[in-house]
Figure 1: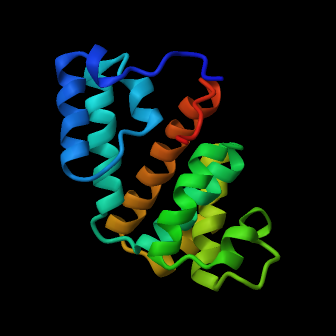
Figure 2 (figure 1 turned 180 degrees about the horizontal axis):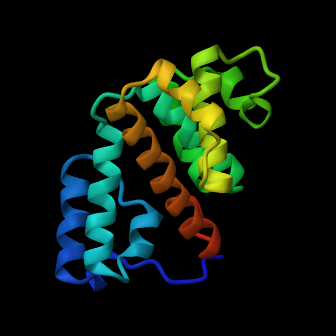
Length: 174
């Protein structure tokens, strides 16, 4: 059971109501995550804007972004996040085997060298914040600075998402 109520459209602040209506007009459901953030209209609005920008991306491969997001959700034990991004990840090219083995990526044959570098970096950023020089050097072999900043932003953002979902016990939509 969620620890805070879900803000429905009828009771929402005008900023939130407009955001919900834009989502609905675009054919997107209003996620429980956003209904929780409806308690803070301006934070919720900008939170969704940043999330949309990350999901649309700038240069990073969507598959690699989704591998990182899935790993963040896995590390945070965020069932909601992991479940939502399983489908998004599959559409981006993440395989069912990779999803099943994300917890043991370091020993799984399902991941190539580039994916392993992304997952090692994700683990360090998500768990330690600090990143070893060797890990960063490996990352730089595969990615330019724009992609590194985008990946780091995605890891940080979805760490925040997972913290909100887990701490407030936000439930998956039915």
